Length: 449
Image 1 (cartoon, rainbow, N blue to C red):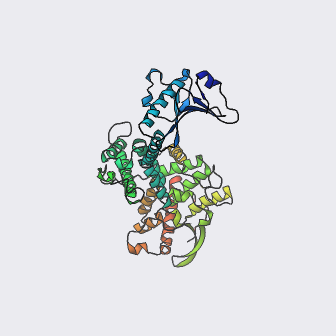
Image 2: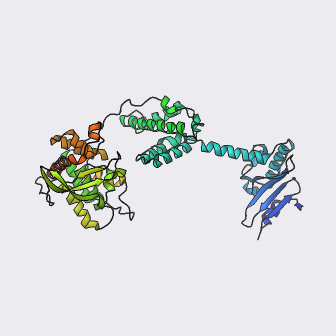
Image 3: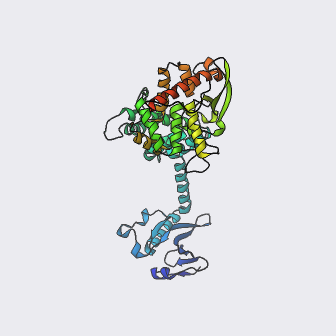
């Protein structure tokens, strides 16, 4: 291997056309510069270990003196070989330091590789890596709340302790995260809403570490559950009690005519049926059918909406009779979109149903001038309305598909409740008609039963 007394001018002039070129320095043993046809110039050091094998250590990449990053602050003892920009004199100094390590029976290349592996292992044991594994587990188990959990982790947890080793996180660090959530907002004081969000973040972190303690890849890394050693921001979350007034329902209904017609129709159906947003926007035409049931001692045919178990929150098929007002909304959608799989197809993504529509939901609320409302407030409003109309708790819960708590009701034949559910939703449809018009016209769809 020919050696040259390297100079900056010679290095800058040297170009590799077809294959790489190695320029060996005559002043520093083992130091050489690899010039590639793509224009890169990388410093390497070749040395021999006591066992007799030769190794090559990457020191950094060449830069001319005018691009020197260090100046007078350069110290070859503090340079970590790898991707460091080095001038010719600096490369010689770093190579000298590394050769001194070789003289003391050390192997710089092996030590560098060991550090890289240790760093990689440490990255795999961080809170962020644990959160990734936890979320994959949640998705594989079909958890419907995984998106909300991911958002909570990304917003409040990962930016603070994501890079920390999962086994070294202390309860005090989690307490600080929870305290910051409680104080979020314009005023630096604990708010009830902040306490609720902190409560849910704590519950999520407890679940995260419980997963780690049971997972074979994590149980050796995590020795305990630091989230369990923190205080609950709230012992019991206050129940939500927001219910829409008649005027608010009228404003919301009217506002659905001013937004995207598909989104507007989906929300009108929600007002009439009280079903969850996820279940409503994923409705398929195949879910709708007319079936014969016993109604008032007679067998009649009524429209039913069958929501499959894999699309309901409680994992149980939900059979919901439809009121004439709800049928009218669906007939309008049929005339608008014609054939297809989805009743409420996405206006942006072909072949898919409506998405979350959070921005559209916010615009709808603002247009209706009803203040802050949640999706669950629509369901609560329907339940309150049915109670006001005199329908018993079991029927209200059946309409909303709340899971029965006792064994008898858990195995109760839902078909036996359909007539009363139909009556309840028809009465509620008439109430909505009354709310949206001082002199509401009868529904155009003939009522059956």
